Image (cartoon, rainbow, N blue to C red):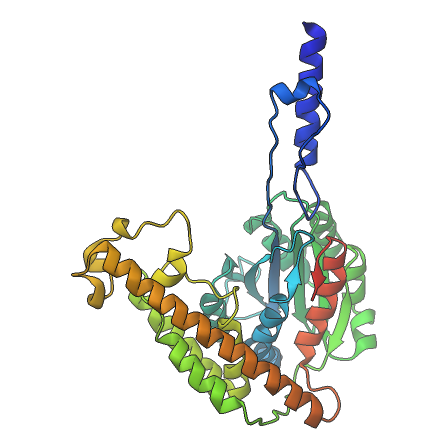
Length: 392
């Protein structure tokens, strides 16, 4: 009997260790008869991997260019992630957190550091927070903002998740009472890679320890021209995508307490992107046509895809007015109609964008991609490879 218990225990321990890691997680059927099968039936588990990125942005007086690049190039990064996949062909979830540091408008007691956004996959919310940033002098404490993000954010213990910090600024990395070496060592212990982006001359960044801050965790050091502006190439497909985006917005059916305010936020972020540059609005529209733009917390169409969602649980007065006097069958039929309409529009946007990108590639001179975008995507792809992520 003791031997039997020992075999069962060994089998369960082996099962738990198998669940511990690897990008693809599928326990295959065991064909040979073993005693452990009596207590451990065949299990198939699909794991959803998450990419967690914390952006630590210097918002002192000289950083307006950096903030503008973050606003405009966010959508390039999101769109690139639509091509990322794990070994099990699942698309990873993308979560972004934002901190600002080095701003005189922030509390000196907090080290001139503020968490602007906790980890979020809500692309409208991420956009809103980036557009809320304003520059204003200050002391830039790199070690302290890294350490603050380690303490405040829920990084989790999943070894398969890709966890990255991107810190950008232009003052010496050594400023502040907290030694940056301690902060990045703590990050490494949590399996978090610190990538540093110096806004200025490459050699100057090395001399002020920005490179060392990255190397200590196996991260990437990069230097960018944060004041560089991109030349936009007009294409015959720009207006088509802008008009399709307007049609896409018409497929959203708000519900619940968040519904109305979230729809307003969606529209506001469209306007923010357009005011910054038409090209940004186009890239945002492309992001909205992807699976990463999911609004199941306030949109009936996205919520309908969730197996745990039941439209009967939504109060009648929290449904769109057009659905409040409808039966469940009529409501679901209406949602399915909007779902089909949305999918068709999204396909049109993606098709138009393929043609748009081909046109840009043919007509551009030199590298037309953004400085911040290039720096981040280069590091992301390199570090994602170690976690068995790939790009189509």
